[in-house]
Length: 313
Ligand code: CUA
Image (tube, rainbow, N blue to C red; front, side, top):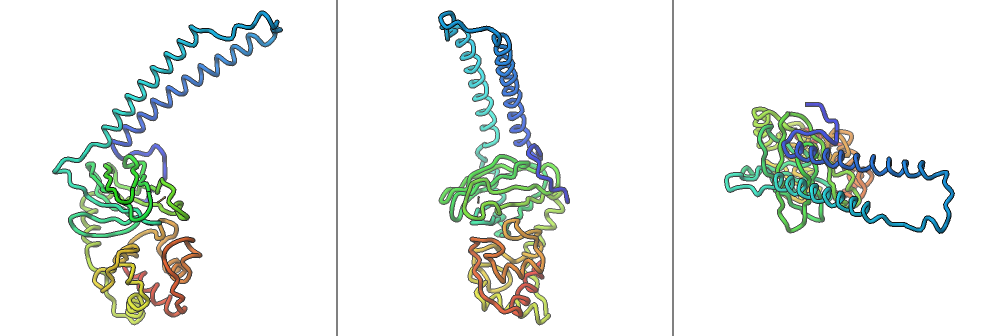
């Protein structure tokens, strides 16, 4: 479960296998063409290097039959690869049937991901948890500008366009952590719009899912209660949801189980007490351009709020 090496050819899905295979064909063809062209060039240079050109003798600058042959080879290559590419495109973007209900809806925001488990109205953010096994369909939307979902090992990438619902097939055959990122420039923090997909064995996934469906924890200690109160009073609740409390807004990420996540700020920072504090204290310092406001809280307030959030496992 701890493996999280980003590898361009890593594949855990049928679709990525097919795309990798296509890439390999392209690569071989390009390599052969390169070797032929470079080899021919070297051959010509060496063959004629010592000959003095007599102006009048070397005026023929065309060779029609060579041109025809190269044009023919190039055309065949273009046609073959067009065919192979279109074939792959159709294989990986099949319209789901009636029974193939979408599993999640992922919405791109500047600069984080909102994940909704359809049918169960469970919302999470920045981490996608899925069961291993068959392909599933995900719906893709954007809340603001064009984003692009890309987790290479799990399938193709797909644009998230405001006002349009796209879909994409994903699959993880093996359990593990799969890294991805936004692939369309979407503003100041495009770089920090990463995502980690956690693929669990189905039973493990079910366990995670049931835990996430629980309401937020409740703790009796004073600091926790103070933080909870501040969350309401300091208008955090105007943007975030914490299920089980009166915070129900959906501008920023759902924080019900915030501390169960590995990372925050679109992957920029680990979820730990210090980072939560730094974030509340000065959001712009941690992630310039982010829409999280600075509420100019006192050290004591920041401490209580961070304590509260850090307990939302
Ligand atoms: Cu979202 Cu780049």
